[in-house]
Image 1 (cartoon, helix red, strand yellow):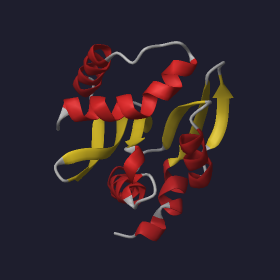
Image 2 (cartoon, one colour):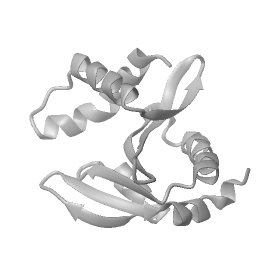
Image 3 (cartoon, one colour):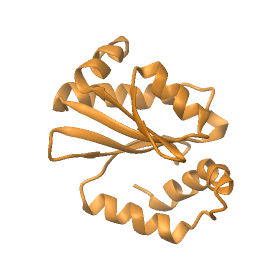
Image 4 (cartoon, one colour):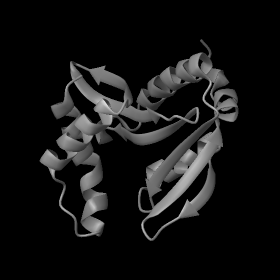
Length: 151
């Protein structure tokens, strides 16, 4: 896994969100965070095109048999492609194999593509802060919603 490519994809997607809060994207801080997340057990589903990471989903299996989505990124150039389907197919396989009880996710309020994706997948809003919205869905329900992807 090429962490530098993940950082670059994060920069492409997150800079506009961070700018709204007068925060600069810091690649060194993101690198440190990714390394800590990997050490803590984070897992990645990655899609590459021409040897470049163009999409990924990062999640953390938790002690209570749930997953916490840490990040989902798709290169803006590929947003209208089938990359999301590729990632969701991997998620479907993972859900079938590991059967997490719940999946939790947090989204920046201004991240409309992610908010729409969560709604489309059936996540329920469970809370909010000034800049984020919290979501959750049962593993069984998400597996059912993704069943069209098949094995």
